[in-house]
Length: 120
Length: 294
Image (cartoon, rainbow over all chains, first blue to last red; front, side, top):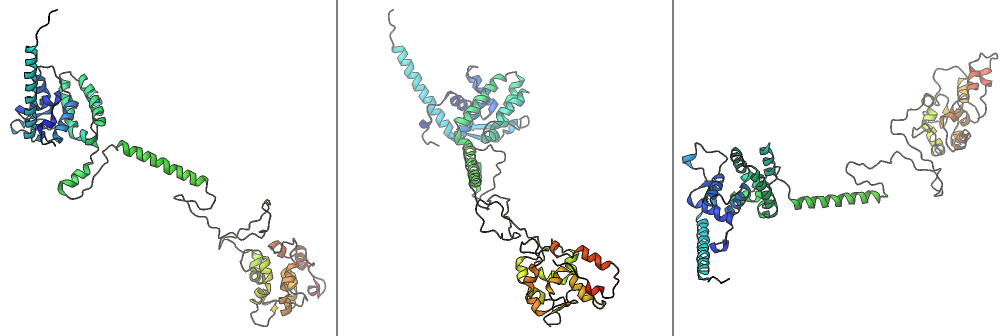
């Protein structure tokens, strides 16, 4: 595991969406897929193969961890579900990625605004 | 049916990935199936299959047993029956099998000795073969004779051999043949029958039953060819000098000149035997009866 969050940057779109989905609450795999679809307004569809490939890698990097089933939904929960939580390291990496994206957005806006339209 | 194929695709994934996330992926498939969106999941599963085997070797190459042992510091048994063997292990095993197979084939094809280093084979025992007598034969001669010695207890002497103590004494190896060596040591063998130690063999010591009529000893000694040739003076007993001359006497029975005596050369002449069974007209017929000279 890398100590510096900047070492993980830039994040792939799938990784970014998964970390963003887990930033709010603990979610199971299918919940992460639905949350990603909601965040992207249906434009980014995450398949289970891609999801669990990222979960496997993020778990190995200690950016995400598996947690016990939530007690409030235990009664109606499927036993096959597993919940995942963003770790402090994962949150730091997500913050660093958001900062990087903010810089990119700010720089992009400046470049777009400063550009003078050419005459045809 | 679709669920069956999707589960099959999941089973093709590396075992660690499958065991860890397989059930969850199948559960997601079940959820998506209720909404009729399963086609994209198949494409995703195929892509995941390729990704796990090609881009994620660090996960499925890591031995799980090592991790288990490292958890508590105590080595633990690991059952790998459910794991798919690594590709490199399969290649190594195949190469090693080919090398071993080639070595065995080469050894068998170039082996000129009697040693067969195969598992399950046994070394043949040649202890029941006698040495050949034609050791000076030319290499191109194919008429070499091999004499096979019967296994111990396999040979049973014929009734005639059993009836004749002289033959049983001469045939020291009890193979039914009086060989050249046994003929040469005939005198020593005959002396084993000398019960009273007078250095000569009477008709009784040669096998004549007791009681018997007078003169029967002479007839008995003439009836049997081996006794007839040994009792050269036909006095009804084998004297010391006749015992010493046993080799020359026995060789007179060797009709085919092969240096040994078989049972066919030792049996009495049937015609002479029949003449004994006819009623004799003269009183001394028994004493005058003579077997044809061998």
